[in-house]
Length: 503
Image (cartoon, rainbow, N blue to C red; front, side, top):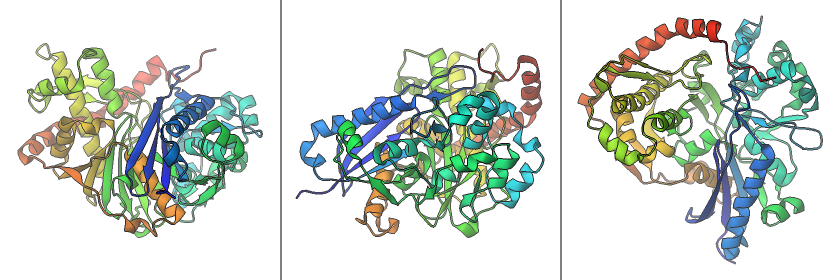
């Protein structure tokens, strides 16, 4: 027999990636497919669940076709995926409608905090606030706006749970996905009262059973095997939400370790023990880590590198990022007084305001589109620093990852902004690496997460003189944030929420 191999899949917002590795984490092969995000009306963000499954089958078949010898040694499958949102199926296991994604804000008209008893119930049960894009908010919106679809929902799943179900036929979720909403972090269970107060008490029966991320939930069925070419009977672990998968892949496996994913979202997170949790902190989310005894304080913004892509598409659509960044580095810190707020999709953390909007401030006739582009980079770096204020100085070993982290310019800017050394693990797919580690513990190949050694990483050292200048920029950024609330509120009263489906 050869060396056992692992199939690990990361189902993101815009791409699904699969890697085939051996148990020493040597990459054998990888495959990916783009997936389409649908926006049928303003504030909606959806995915075709059957299209996602088809893309999953395509990447696994591609790997099987290119690696027949390694494929025969497949020991297990592990999936990590985008979090939050709602992936609804009916009693026959078929999608009720498109999945509603984490950045879907159609429910922002519903003021959950104004519902009598909700704030107190959240506090008493140590759960996260109900935010637009959470399963609770989307179930509530669906019941109010699409009652016939709501009646057909048997299970409200998360992304990876849908793929696990297609592989094994089992309905379940893990603590990391479940813990984002209506979950009691002290007792590790759903909070029925919160669902009742939201007007969806019957949905307790629609939420999947919770199991540990490292549990083997079943084996690949004959039908799934024929579609994916994964050998029938291959063991499948439950897996976790993608932010926890990246954390495990980034060596964020001990209290105080932290990382930032500079991807579609800007997600900053820190590992904590149970006795380190501040349950009164309502900025961001408290999430159960994939590692059984740890938790994550997660501050996931709605706009990350996507805001840079958006601005680049407007101002420099034909220029490569490396070329553009060389020119941006010649401009002074602060972009000659031009500031940018990166809230192109509203915001949920560290400020919670789905009506927030992006904007340039301090624009004069002396500014160019290059100034505007640099201010976008700096605005995202300010948002990064803003997120870390939630962690109350506990962070250490800051790791940078995600698509934009390939840029030395971005990494150095973030490093200078926070004024502390940062590291970048030079592994292409940290989500699937983290999933491979989870899978090895689940399969018993490794006894625990403590058995994994830290990885080699590129080090970034802060320039403290630049840090001081960035602090001046952040001071202006934060001051504007504090006064923009009234504008965002008045804007909504004039233009509306833009969250209603077309009729």
